[in-house]
Length: 89
Image (tube, rainbow, N blue to C red; front, side):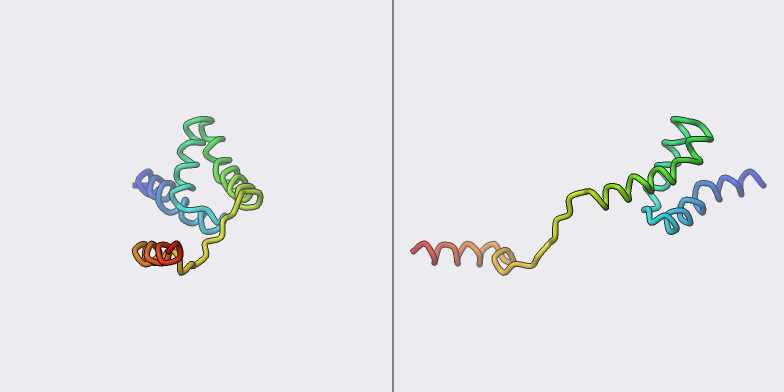
């Protein structure tokens, strides 16, 4: 019974708690623990979340961000095409 509890805690509860604490998506937290464990064993599983959080912070800090803006031009393709054709006439 204890083994079942540990497995549930390790694979279901812990990734969610760590993801909220480290600002990681639960799927990314789970995948990083699995990948870290597969690559480096138990040490990799332990270090996987801090490494994944560090990589996420680096990408968010130094990555390229694109702001999405609302534009009247692209709300309706037919309306945009009609406006474009009216301007060329």
